[in-house]
Image 1 (cartoon, one colour):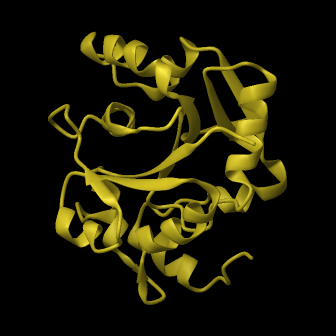
Image 2 (cartoon, rainbow, N blue to C red):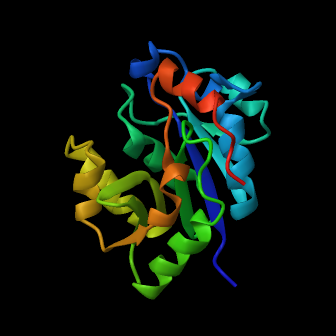
Image 3 (tube, one colour):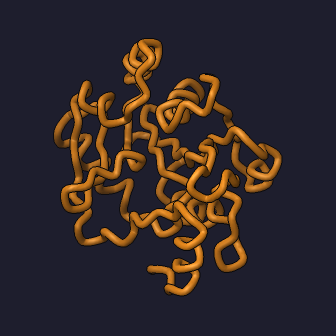
Length: 197
């Protein structure tokens, strides 16, 4: 049996490339993006949190606890991870972005297997030569290292990952599952394609 995992949907960004809208609440085929992500994530984890800095009541309607960043100024995905690690009651925490509605159904299984096999602090998905840094499974014990990193003024996810014992997990067989929606054009294009199983 695996350890308990909290899943965190990262919806705390500013949505700059989409005109400053709250990306997680944008509609795709009649449902907000965050609902698509929640539907694919929830069966894989023990509990789900949503990291959001705007519209907390709308996100709370999904039945999940909503956590804002405790670091001000829209500090990026590491601020969302920090907020979630500070609150999570489980030994492991998985992050996924709110703008990837077709994330893999076996994401947790594969990341957890690598985390355990390599005795890593964090496991992250990779497609080809691109590391999908927002899709990561972390041990709760990395919170102290993350706090030190953020206190130094750093915000780059890759730089923080490089400071940890990291396991990269190839998802080349499911590369399309990591497609994220950054612009209104991406959203329109995604609406024309069938969702994966």
